[in-house]
Image (tube, rainbow, N blue to C red):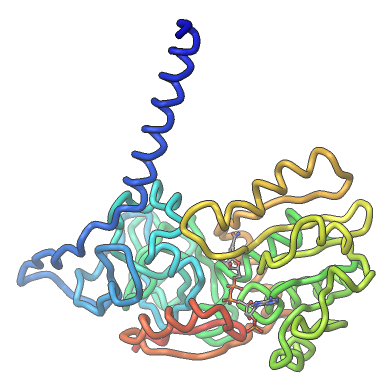
Length: 367
Ligand SMILES: NC(=O)c1ccc[n+]([C@@H]2O[C@H](COP(=O)([O-])OP(=O)(O)OC[C@H]3O[C@@H](n4cnc5c(N)ncnc54)[C@H](OP(=O)(O)O)[C@@H]3O)[C@@H](O)[C@H]2O)c1
């Protein structure tokens, strides 16, 4: 065999072994470890924790150490939290690629939940924006707990007085995602025609209302049982996906926000105006490439067409929380709340979220 074939063969074998090893490491689930010992003097709180990847059975309702705020942190007594698909993605460590951030064969951090609303109980000595007694909402890992600490300059904002803690807790991930998809990726302008695929879920119910507040003409895609709800939050037109396929209707939109990923990009191209924008927010479940195929195809297609296809990765920002607070205060956005669960029932709430048919947001009431 010629030398260059030997080298090429060696490189192929090397990459094959490396990819197989990475795949085995990423997909390996370690056994659940024991709860760490807690000393007798530690002040405790109740929280949902997990020490291994898996189904909601890996979630435990336990006593853990109550956090104390660092100099730049705020300690919040959580009144309500909310569930997002992100919670069961990190619980399962799926798709496996997220384990590069969350921990290879077991989670690095045992806390669960992100969205919360509550009352500031204490602040570190350098904190300027908040004081004990302030009603706040925000996003921080470990929100399925009685208390959470968060640096004051992170995703934390004052709760508008006219909304409840449960409504405020429903906002951070879902509403920020909707806002950034419409405003930043979607470049939404008054009068634009926007289609929201998945209008009845957590992100969708915010997207419909935020798009209306921007002066857009909104079409919501949902199933029959959600038609009245999606109309009631302001959608101008409804497409019942059990009866009609929006990509086959002949209508075209300036912007499509897709929470579902159930139509090909070529089909979505037909439903876009010649310079329309398609924003991928959600897609099919899967441990490997399944959820990534939409974004990969979008990346490959975009340079060759006038329409824009892109993936949104939402970022929790305090300025966007403040904007959403103003929209709620002014009555443009009212969170839609589906089922409510107690903290100890987070595993049941997550099972419900995993079914993929939430009607608005799922709330956890912390008592
Ligand atoms: N990229 C990001 O930064 C980001 C941020 C947040 C969320 N996400 C992703 O966005 C997706 C949506 O999140 P979410 O919080 O809104 O989820 P969710 O609250 O669980 O909502 C799911 C909704 O999708 C609807 N749906 C299911 N099949 C549908 C179909 N074929 N056509 C239209 N609607 C359909 C369901 O309505 P029916 O019951 O009527 O079927 C349900 O209301 C998830 O995949 C999530 O992981 C991404």
